[in-house]
Length: 117
Image (cartoon, rainbow, N blue to C red; front, side, top):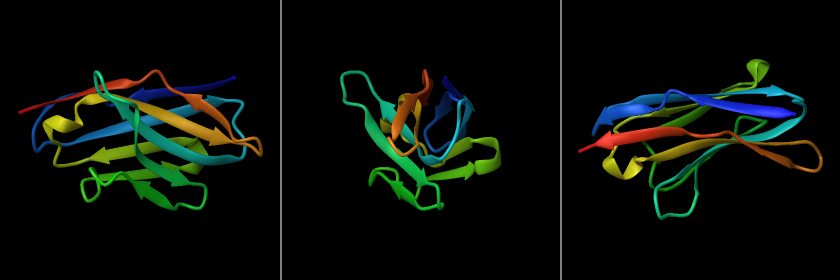
């Protein structure tokens, strides 16, 4: 059992900031990657940011320079600091974890982020 719980979503105005938190619990071991995805209505789920076990990060072009992913490995927790938010960032944001030699995948339930123009 692995559970991912997202928090920190909400309603903000364009230009504002939010910080999302994802706390992983359960049978956690050998995490390879923790990620944030988002899915807007009618769109495919999109990778927003990822952070590997060594701290390496990747970002979607649409959020580079505005979003920062970070982690606390001891707490199995990943964060997404979102600055300069745009209405286009409105989506349900999902935490995602990959672990183990078989690269098992787990998903959170999502947290809604709404950016008002």
